[in-house]
Length: 542
Image 1: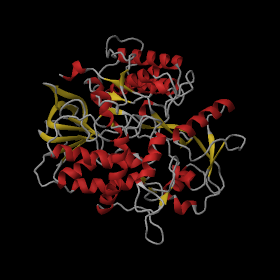
Image 2: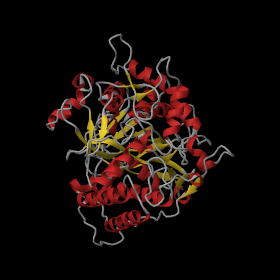
Image 3: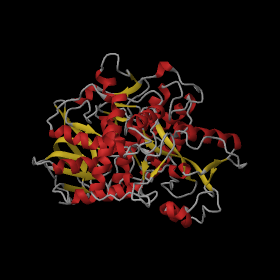
Image 4: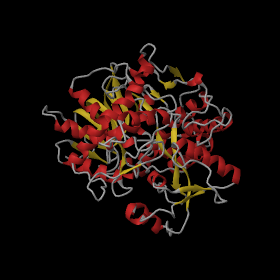
């Protein structure tokens, strides 16, 4: 069923918000269960229109290689996470990941193979072994999405396309559904016993991003406004090799290029960083070199790669469109906002602190990524924890356990990375006064993005974060609900403001540099800050 009208659909046993890898993995698993589960999938675009389809990176998993092991994959993930990964969460990821990849192949996903028929595996930044499988060279997300969408459409779930979830419905301490804007513009209530947040990332907080226009942090924003704990939101990973080009989202030059031998060069043509270091290290080195040179971009030299067009047909086609030939041209690059390492706090089964509310994928903070995501762990995370979320609901789980990142909220003795409230977060007073903020949501979004890029980008400082926060308060004071064609744009701006406020608060609170969070005024990693910063307001949870 495809929902298009304004009448309230449902009620549902499970309402999945988002149509990326996490949400659809959950929906497919629910559909496979013999129990009659009434599932609805709500997406503000089309079913196949999500951040997943833009993912050029592959899926990192240990698939039968004698030179690799899940212990090595775990060690690489922990190293990238800079001391903030939850060990048990990472163990779940690396141990269950191979089976999830196998299931995806069984659904029809076609990954690249060697002439021998074996899966082709690449090495990417932060990985000690080649364990990343790709599809179409650099079109893995599109292939994963295709397979999951086809599997979802063959199930009996209700698909609500072009619906926009606005806020969680909370009563008696439990999530009971969402308010949502129908394609007609009407706002209705959609009731559900369980709500799955799988709405993707927050890349649209910044002027330069690899994320599509839909990545406006909707799930995290709804959780923040409902007082549900969120954590690690200061750790926003910037991908180092986004093509420096006016196109938005920025075309991504996959990490696999560096894995196959492409080099980073500055304006003098000199190499300046280990190309296979974790992404935070590479992006930070690039930002520092660009600042020193007064440059707005650097270069990726892939001229030494053999059979570029055969290995990476998707990238070759996108480069041809902008007049670049990787065989002879150095490729202009600059860091771009790419992945949120934190999100809505969950246990290892996706349960949040609010009964009936679950989260998985980039929207969630299960403890997998810590302070910085290891390359190509994101699609794997969505597969693994989307399925676990579905299995927990089918098993009748009703409350979170002190596992994963949820330890920082519920506590678990000496094993916990303690939660620490972010003290600088203040409620945004939406619509308090007209103020100087523009009423046009597009202009407001542009102002927000410029403020966040300047104040909370690759490198932050106390002064830059204060300046960004001032803009957020100003924009929130002048915000008004949109009408007609501007309604969704205004809704998205409200969500971006809600998420930006906690990002800035956490970045200001964390007085150190760790992983994807770099403070120019606190350049060192401080053991005292080996903790999660948790935003929560229990009074709002009913």
